[in-house]
Length: 586
Image 1 (cartoon, one colour):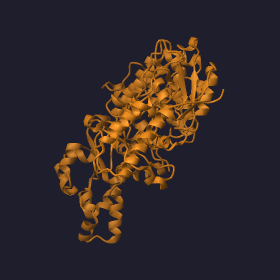
Image 2 (cartoon, one colour; image 1 turned 180 degrees about the horizontal axis):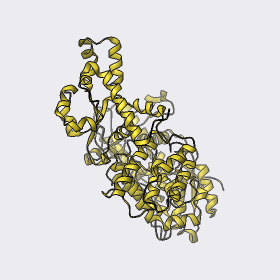
Image 3 (cartoon, one colour; image 1 turned 135 degrees about the vertical axis):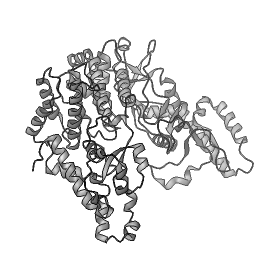
Image 4 (cartoon, one colour; image 1 turned 30 degrees about the vertical axis):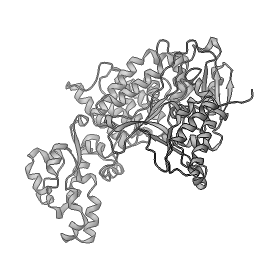
C-alpha cells in the first residue's frame, strides 16, 4: 500500500482518540530543544520523515495494551498512561514516530516541565511547567546562514507568555488550532495586528503576517505527516517491522520490546505499569537514591528464576514468562532487600559502577525469603559484613563489569550449590572467579590501583569504606575528609613555608590520594575545618587512630612530614586489606 499524508491538525484530532502507542514503545525522551528544532523544520517546509502505523482488526483490539500519548511531559521522563480503547473504531498503534508525534501534541496542546538551574531535584520550587510560544516579529531570513541544524524561527518554551517589545510579539503556538477555516483565521490575524505597538515598522508587520500565515499553513494546510499503515495482524511480523523501523532512532531498550510481550501474557496484571512502578520504588523510595532501569529488572528475572542468563528476547518465551510471573512477588522482595542492603552500605547511584554485581546478592536473598541481614543476630552480622566486603571487592576489581553473562551464570551455580546454607559463600565464589581468570583477591596491582584513588572519584568511597568495620554508611551523613586539610596545600602557602619545588609537587600530588583521606561524620568534619592535623588529633580519643588507620607516630603528624605520613598510612591500608581478603598476591 502506498504512503498517505495528512495535516498536523488532522492527526492531532486522532491522537489519544484513534491513534495510541503500543506497550512495545519506549517512553518519550526528546528534550525541549529537539521539539523546537522539529517545529523549525516544519516552518521551513522541510520533510520530517515518515511515520508507521499499525491498524488492528476489531477482533484483536483487546489483545494488545495501548497507551496514551503524553501531553504534559517532564524533564527526566514521564510514564505513559494506559488507555481505555473500548469503543475505539479503527484502533491504530504508532510503531514509528512516537517522539515526533508526542512533540507535536506537547507543543500544541500540552506543556514541558523542566528543572531550574542550580535547584535541587527534591525541591518542588525547582520545577516549572512551560508552554510553547512563537515570536511573530522574528525574521527567519536573518538566520539563513545557520545551516540545517540551527533555529531560524523564534520558538521558545516559557513558564509565562514572554513579554512583548519593539522586537517581539508572542503567541502560544497551540492557539493556531482554534482556526479551522480561513475566515476565522483572517479575523484573528487582523485583531492581533491591531495590538502591535504604533511604532511597529512596515517591515515588521510584513514579517508578522508572513510568520502567522506560515504557522497556520504548516498546521492546517500542508500535509506534513506522511505515513504507511500496516494491517497485517501477525504480531511477530509487526515486532520485526518495529525493530527495523527504530534501529536508527534513539536507542531502544530491550525491556521496551519485552514489556510488550510480558504485558500481553501476564494475565491479570499490567506488567509495564507494574515494572515501571517497581523501578520507581527502588530508585526513589529506599534509603538512598538509585538509578536502576527496566533492563536491570528484566535481566534479574532471568537470573533469579534459573533461566538462561543472556538477555535476549528468545529467552522470554511464553513458558519462561509464566515462570517469572509466578515468582514476581518473590523477585520484587529479593530485589528490594538486595538494593536496601547495598544502600545500607552506602552503595547507590553515585558508586554502583556495575549493577550486575548486585544480582548475586539478590539471588542469595531470593533463595532465602525471610532474610534481610539488617538485624543483629550472628547470621545477620556475619553475612552483612561478608556481602559488604565481597560487593566492594567485586566493584573495585570490575569482576562483573562489561560482558559478564558467563560470570553471572557461574556465580549463580555456586549459590545454587550452597543450598539452604544461610551463609553467603564468599570463598567459593572467589575460587570460581579466580578460575575464570578474574581477580578475586587483591594482588599487588589491585592494591596500587586502590591507593591511587583520588578524592571525589566514583569508587573512592568504596575503597575507604573497607578501612572500617562499620556497615551502615548509608544511614549516616558522612564526608570524605582530607586528614591534612586541603587549605594547607595552596601553592602560595607552600612557597611561603619554604618548601622546595620538588616537595610542593610531591605534596600536591599526594593531597587527594587515599592515604590522606578518611570517612568522617559531617558534624565532626565541620568542627575539624582547617585545623592542623597535629593539633586536631590531640582532641580525639585513643580509639580514633586505630579506627581510621592513623600511624601511631606523632612526628608524622607534622606537616613537614606529610609525605612520610602517607607512606606509613598506605602500609596500614594494605595490611587492612590483607586481613579482610587474605595475603596480597605478588
